[in-house]
Length: 390
Image (cartoon, rainbow, N blue to C red; front, side, top):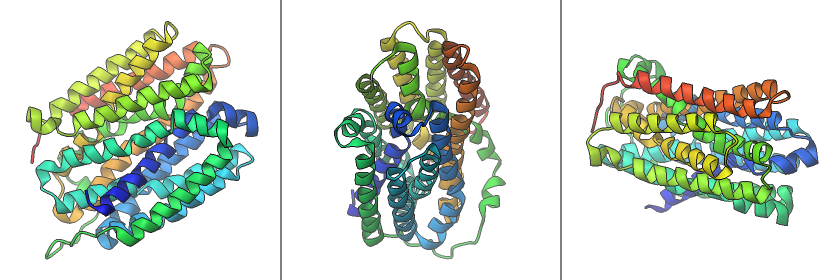
């Protein structure tokens, strides 16, 4: 691993942290500034939607300006500035605005590393390298679990955010200084996002890309906290432990998915198998919502493991990209992946608030059932795609 890739990995740790830490701070934010589960769902959803929307300009910037300037500048302004704004928050609106700004800062980080992999390393190794980056970076999921709960109790949530603001700024400066931009292809052709949208094979990948990460990110990043608190009355520390277990499952999943295409000689059927397994786990959560906290955490961990197919889906799509549109291609897929989570966060918040006042248990059963249906539909469409290896 080069020094610049290590820095990008650290930056991705922050990105994973920021998309998941609200679940642990649910209780303390509600007590301090009146942020309810619905308002935090909206804040989390805004992070994902802005992150997704940024993929279009980020893709163009990667192709034109390279990963050094793109990742360094956006992480400094968005990550460092957004964390500082969060630390100063006095109302739920401030939290929502801060999360949106942080979404801008995190938007180029993983795609910058994928851009370097695609331009620098052999195509057959892309899924493995992407999986390693995703897996190591997902340590942020673990930091966003029990350690965050402990930090919030020790130095307060504001102190924790100030530390994150300083750390984000320092890593951003390191990216600007050390990231090595890959050489541009000789005789580089001009192209646009529309050229990618004209590739028919990609349209059978988009639906599953839109829903694959949705349940894992939605549950781990937001609903695991309110669910375990409302249904099983678990404490903040117990919720932190549960999120730690699910975060570990997500990390293990990325390392297992990464080389799986080369091991089994297929990308399509590895992804289909994982998607259907995750669907079964979500159905189990919907049917056995209040029977056992241990069973629920186990099923949520299976959802997290199976929702880690992101690098293999990117690799599958990348096999159809022309070289000069690599940056736009990987960010287009990321737009669908993260955009799906954002839509779900907003929708899940409204769905939960509509049902929970009269039947809290039914609200969570409905959430898990809707997630299961979404993944199943995406997997069925994906079954008609063309399996393709490098």
